[in-house]
Structures are given as C-alpha cells and as structure tokens.
Length: 351
Image (cartoon, rainbow, N blue to C red; front, side):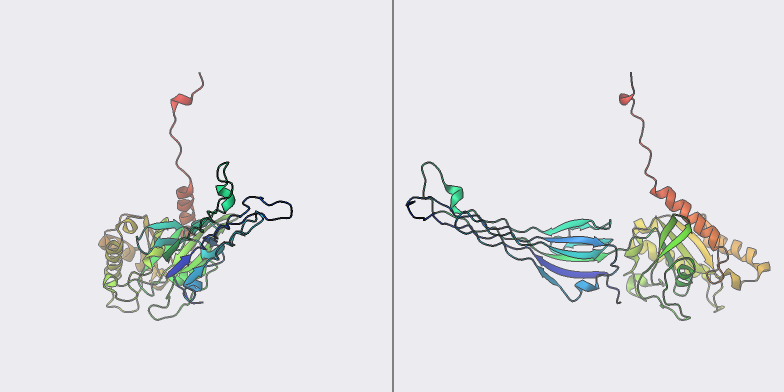
C-alpha cells in the first residue's frame, strides 16, 4: 500500500430542511389552526481515529465529502427527518488544519476519538412555531440554516515512543526488523526506506514500546537533497531519538563523525524543538570492527564528535548489545509516561 501522509480534502455538511406553512383542514373543524412542522437537521461531517489505518491514501482519490440535507417539514405537525452524519476514518496521529486560516481544527491522538469537521445546519421553523394568542393563523416559516463547508489539510504524524535517525544505510531498518514485528525493505543501496515504518518492541510481559523508522537524511536535506525533510515530522511526537551511526563504513574515505555531525546540523535546521529532544548515540555494525580495536575507536569517535550523552554500541544484524539498548529505552519511555507528582497544598490538610 502506498504511504500518504499529506492530503487536502473538502467537506460540506448538509443544509437544514425548510419549515412548512400548513393549516389543519378536517371535516367539521373549519379553523384547525397552523400545523406546519419544522425542517430536519442537516448531516454533519466527523473525523474518527481508526487504529487499523496507517496512511491517508483513502483521501487521495476521494477529495469531496458531503453530508445529506435535512428533509423539509410537512403538515399535520410532522417534522422533517434529520440527515445521517458521515464519519471519515483517519489514522491515529492525524492533524487536521483549516486551509484558509491554517488553524488546527483538531488532532486525533486516541483510538476512537472523534472531531467535528463541519456542523450540519439546523432545520427551519414551521408556522406552528409562530402561533400566538393574537396571531392564530400565522403564515410565516423559515428556511433551514446552511451547513458548514471547509477545505481541510490532513497531515499524518505517526505516534511512536522512539524514533530512529541517521544516514541512509546506517542500519535503521535492520535494527527495527531485528527487535520488532516490522518487516521493512532491507537492501545494500541508499534510500531503501521510502516511507516510515512502525514496529512494536516487546521487552517483557506487558512491557513494550513503539519504534519508528524514517527514510535516511543526508547533508543538504534542507535544500531538498535526497528525500529532504518531508518525513522528519513523524519524529516530532517521539519521546526519544536514537541517532544511528554506521560505525564501520565500507568506503574508507567516509568519515562516520562527519556524517553524524551532518545529521545533527540538518536536524537543527528543520526544527529547534526536535533538535532539543532527548537523543542517544547508537554506534551500529560494531561486529565489523576488530574486538581489539573496538574500544579505542569508540573513544576516538565520542571525543571527535564531542558527545556528552548516552552511548550504545550494537549490531542490528547479530543483535549484539540490543538487549541492553531496549531495556534502557523502555525504562526511559516508562519514566516519561509517568505524570508528574502534584505539589502538596497545605490548604487541604485536615485540621
């Protein structure tokens, strides 16, 4: 299935039905009075988060979504039927913006959460509404109110606890395939990953977190090189970023430190808030470095990179060091999910 994370749609709610101007006419009741009913409400348009969806491709080919109008009122005090609402199912993590104002209409962050996109118009009043003691035969009625109509931009940001960041062929897809149920495409050429992949990593019974793999970044992504910055938005909801580095490049002319610095620079260009998120350094493919030289090369890399945060050395292929990394990630994510303790308020102490 093609991955689509941005799309623009038009939604239109239904108009309310018109009220009815009618009078009761029955045998032996010459002055029955007004009996015109109200019009029905027009259908509204809702968005609902569906955990079974992971792309917006359904809206790529269906751009216009209209709800039905409410029925008009009828005589004999009969109100018009209200139109059914329509529900647009979207992936969890979808942000909905108004195209004209660029304001955020809402965000779907929980499965089953619903957001009103366009409200249906209310029905008009029949002449029964205008009956008074001095106006016993009113002929007034009102038309139904129009429904809302909007152009909306849908933007999907995947919900993941941990995001993988790094150059193409740094081993991100290999890692997420080794530790989770995700099955991304893996090959020995750059930009094998063309869209984000999500995987659930299980550390133990009832202990898990979600990991996201995005296409690799290269120097100049801000100017559109490679796949640019178009997928970095999917890391903005992550609680932790793992900066994967190819510690044993096949080309001797490639400097892993220079590549790592380029990634950090591109991250800062894209979003300062994303740059300031907790970020750990993960040196991948250590199985390709001689055990005798490994410790010295790691110290040299950290010194030249001027890194002061947490460092992990792993091999996504052999799973060397992966268990320690996953356990540390789970403890970090678990601590982030715990709400802060409320401050003690002495006003509520018992006397």
